[in-house]
Image (cartoon, rainbow over all chains, first blue to last red; front, side, top):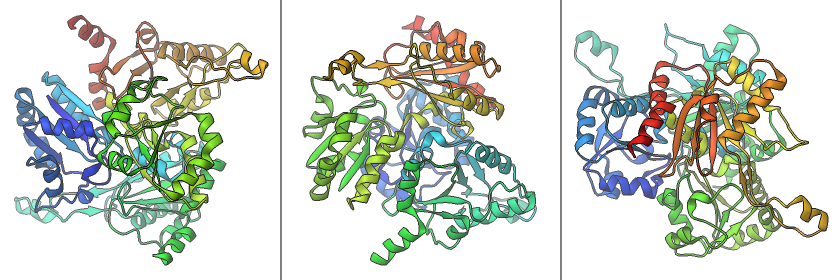
Length: 282
Length: 282
């Protein structure tokens, strides 16, 4: 049996009882490392907080490993119980769909254990989840690669008055260009897009496309470390949010559409003014 | 402190470790009863499976109670730790946003503990969550009340090639018309919309509006008891899904938009043909 288990968003104690019971039944435990594991106290030096909780050793599975060794993982799962742990909910990313498809094709039984993902946890700020349009992903711009197909998607959402969740780029274990040229893989340090970079890129695209989809006065909500103890949620114009230091990753951003009174009431608690007030207190 | 804690979708063991620890710290525990608690083994006769797990008694809070006694709940939360348990994730429904807004206005500290909701768990069928448009709610039609404003929303989603999640009506503790006339409240038995009723209503609206937004050959995915052991996921045309008995509630429905190959590969496992094959085996 292959158990695909969501870990939730905060730390090791965000696993469900059902998820924990499943892990304890497993002979082999993998944790996907191609989104972010920062908040789980995982580092190159170890997976201690998770391993301690489960009483088992865990294998860190980066994208490369999952792609290369998927057959090994699946043949283990055919013979015994294997857990594949995923930050958030298992179906937040296409990669996990791939894994499940391959498992099912090989006749390996799959059980999915759900958890919170960023897609529902953003509900925290009061913007209703059913009022979101298509989710967009913002990639890091490079000198030569500045894709802006997200612009039309934001436009469609805004025409309909819908909110837009922007997922921000994460680059973990990217081979460096230099190392690729030399023929042996060396990796860039991990890179996480900040809300500041996201807003700068968004405004750059608005500037070049010029269809007034949004501007620096458009209300957004910035989220950092959603689901963690030190999470940060600040609502304000793009211009205002550019002045805020959201701290450590992960960040994500919501571009606010047309709001209802109950949504506005809740957003009031997260304005930049309220945030600065709360900072003074501590 | 008011802890607003998501219970997830399946049963009592879908609470997170963090959620369970919070409940154990609380002097008073409420569980909201205005969505569905069916799968949690809760009934009018008791809340046994949850109470046993928590080692505490739980107060069932229906909509009426929350609306009438919110001040009492919040003043308890000012003095002590109070847990408010919610099926799915706390921010799936507007009602919980209201509760949090009122708490914050009174200066009561609030901690939210997230969990899976139907909004992300539908990812199970392989349709990517970022390819969904606005979520719609389908209300039960009556002889005199047949609102169809969801039609334009489905249209907007389909024009953009996006999937549409349809949440189906739940009527719990609705006063009967007869009892209202007599001046004392008596309640209708709970009523949950089935996928069959949803599709019939959708087709009726298409028939009367006639803008070819969808038809009986449009591919959909029906979900019953999502997140439970006996969950059911079947993909097929509206016409095909009308022939399927999805069994006990809760049901929900996804109208499939434009699909990518990896989405199609996964949907293949859930076709009506596959479902009938799996039924023969058991």
